Image (cartoon, rainbow, N blue to C red):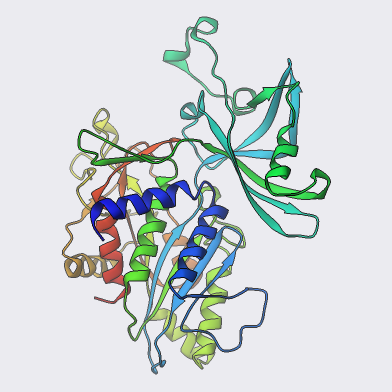
Length: 420
């Protein structure tokens, strides 16, 4: 696919995926269009299709199995996460204050909070009716988190401190406005407000992905962390040819809040799916464990490019840059899953794809983040390498990457899935 078309497709995916639930719906749509069969997790599957997928809330797993299972098939997993830092609406959080409609929120994950002020914000997520049916909703430009004018606190430019409960309550409009947000959202999904049983709703950026730079060489968008990885993984998965290995695309939810949920990397979603696959292949429990021991996982998440104004916060010798290619992530403390064996697996895939890669390590004085790689490795016992695309402004409401890097990462991921 030409670069312009690939980038346009990525931008469409970003714009179609304001929350993890929307991302999974878009993934499902694309997989079905490519001939993959959707299966419901709560049903008995019996004989499995060679190409299929299943979803659980904001998580999805797709697979491609060999036409005929050999006695010792391999296992290749591309894993990413669908969620991003945001502000989540609290239940019963709508109220009036000083003549305004307001929405009480809780911080989800670790967003760069100052970037959320004075932005046009959408409300997006899912509404679940009393029958238990989920309805996706996306209400454009209905909220703002107003900042305090500099005249009212002149210390803000030097000493800004965001107190979440005080400062992040979102303004939805005038108290006299009709309808209120709850009614508006119910109307959008065709429900009476009395039919609403619960919701998972987030404030998200109401601005489309945009190419920037003098030649459009950069991409600015919300949720590059971690939809860049999800889109690269999907592109690689659909482009990969069937081999003697089982290939999986795994997209978990809730990475930004620790992954300890039924659809997170520390939960049973992937473990149960792998057991159902191996049972379909006729594996005993012993053969199943041996299969996992032969497996490889590429854990994909964005990483930090060196900041041009604050290079002091980065390692002094190892500094990834935008446009420099995909990035291997390494940590002596195993905050990432990479070790020598999986580093070699990554190097083979990069060489097979003809892609130059970079390396990220932490400055010893600056504690870094983590990824779902060690969680998946601990849960499944599969050798794991962590890698991703370099970005600036990670956890900002608008992040930045180079246009060329996601395609290069997808090429490496395709080589990895093919066992090259």
